[in-house]
Length: 66
Image 1 (cartoon, helix red, strand yellow):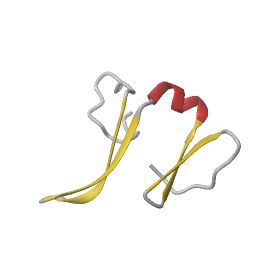
Image 2 (cartoon, helix red, strand yellow):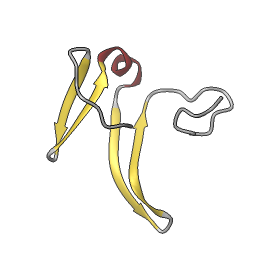
Image 3 (cartoon, helix red, strand yellow):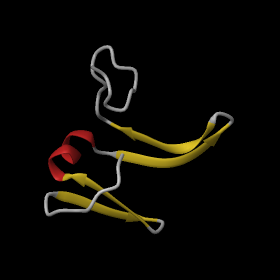
Image 4 (cartoon, helix red, strand yellow):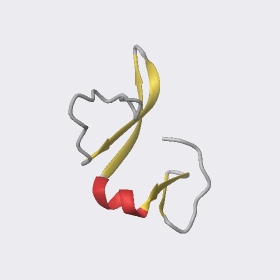
């Protein structure tokens, strides 16, 4: 997840006053997507769930696997 400006290739959603964007081509591969703000004893932040399958050997490293 990152802050960005939208462009015509994005699918745009607004929920609870927040706007989310995702590239239309990627959205077709990952929908449905669930974005939630969570608070735990270890801290708080966003949790993102989708139908996208993790790469073999990847344990949710947010794209820094490599």
